[in-house]
Length: 330
Image (cartoon, rainbow, N blue to C red; front, side):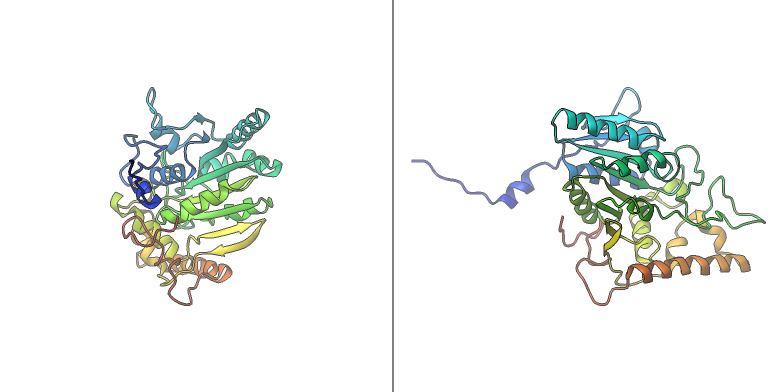
């Protein structure tokens, strides 16, 4: 006589080791938001993927020759051609009748600036690729030069504050709206401080047959000038102030946005970072720039309807975070 053992699926899942496509032991800086974001993305995709990775921090700290931290097939592309390389990989797999999903990874420099032409072509041709931009708002691995993702008034080595201007003069490029204007099925923003939100958006993108895009906001302690153990706090404040809204766009139209339960003043976010320290002086133009940045956040809150009307499990406070735990929903 045999005894039938029944184990709940939830218990089996707890005992099963989580898939890790990006192994520990790589050479990212302490508190690197990009390393955590890449790991969360690969955990959500599972092993049946191919990755095309643009030149940048992620490529450098994960593959110091002859070592590699990747446990999925991975190709190093150039700054400027990740979209084209990923499109070629997808076409080759399609010709072979395979359904393996292709991922394209790039930083903000390789996405907003140098690689934008190839990205635009990939989106326009409708390749079945999920493109993930790890946005740390500057060219960090080459010495913290400004990119078109660098926020207004931030200090970099090529946008220093001085007599003529207070850090970067131009506004951060609205890349997700530009991408969505290609009429692709799905584009979204996410923050490394909300892991479940990243996983949900990655899985949603994978379920779509066609080009999809995800922009993940990733603090860089070295380039932003904060302690490594403050990365999640800083990233969360970017969301809670309205400076980095978490939104989803379908065929170019706004589909959803994460409400902010307690809207914080932008000074709480800016004060934690050395790249904005020149704004906290007695100079009149410094105060003027702070008012300008607050106006940018207020504009985001209004156009995306980010003001939470009541307590919500899925708003900026109810959503789970790296440090606080909470309701896990993806």
